[in-house]
Length: 175
Image (cartoon, rainbow, N blue to C red; front, side, top):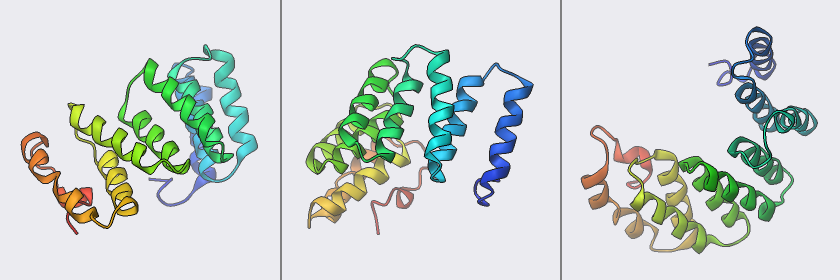
């Protein structure tokens, strides 16, 4: 709620207060603080939070790899980002890491590869996620003049596999 209102400093204060109260979720809170700093353009603070996590965990853990990938994205080092997101996905597969890998490929001008990765994951995933579909739809719109036909080709798939109540228009398939 505070983040939606754009109150970066108050969100940061709340997260830092949580750190003082309980260290049970220390790595998650530090990661959130680092990501918040990146969101608002504070690279040096993000690096400090992420380095604290690196000192607490092994280097090949998903959270460390993801944070390294996010720092690389911020620095326009998309190849390094993609390597870190792949590493994160190998250790703990998730739709977020798949999306990050695809976006990294896109930034490296490998749009077709990004589309293929997203399509494959969506077809093989037991969970339909809005974020992956939105990324896929965006890639279709950049890739082809046949974007609308490609988007509509997913409607039968969604009819069979989407959870009940999913609003197809929220996926960007139908405009």
